[in-house]
Length: 253
Image (cartoon, rainbow, N blue to C red; front, side, top):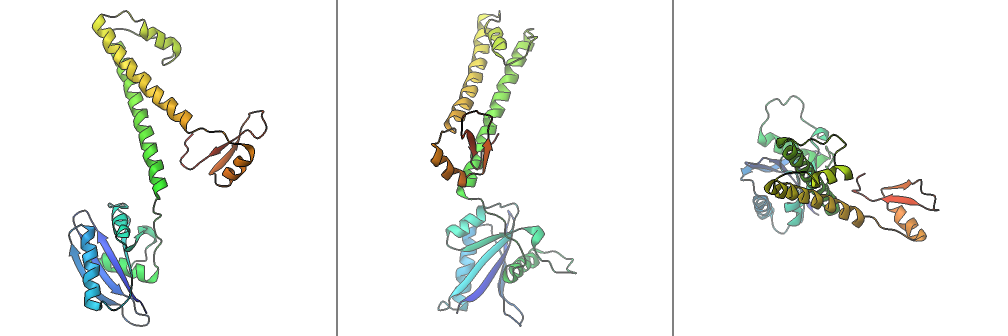
């Protein structure tokens, strides 16, 4: 029979406090250790191995570690699970807390987390998959390009303003672009403005290439199969039969 061990971890950027507990039905819980270590997941692994050695290597163990969602994000979770250790991240607002305990310490917090792990007094935080992370990275990249495009627009506007050129119409249209190309400025100024304009065109081109790359067409019955896995299916105003759009996870309108 496996021995149940729950390890509550009160984690900070400067230290981890680890509390190992064995819940026993109808009796007081056994606390085997409540120590503080430097903030390195390898110290958690060493802590677990030391526990096994003290309690008997011949035993089988059901060990789960857990910590509150906070400053470390998912990094410690991925490090521990990557080393073969079960780990959960607890949502702080769902954790059962001890009534009447006013003095808050790292050791007490670690003990409380161990108790929550032992008796199910918490809800686990959703851990993003690799696909979720890749979508986030894509969105960050897209936002970076949007900022770069905004910046070069500001640079072009500021350049024109500094040298007394004002466009009365709507900016960033074909007419505005022709106006920029035909501005009567000195050779050095023209070279500077052309560099800004080239950067602008580069950012626009990147956006257009990304837009084309993520759009694809499907045959009718293939569409039905993909629609089963889709985040959403949008009916368009297109007059062709079956002219719908599938949105996959991570699609931004």
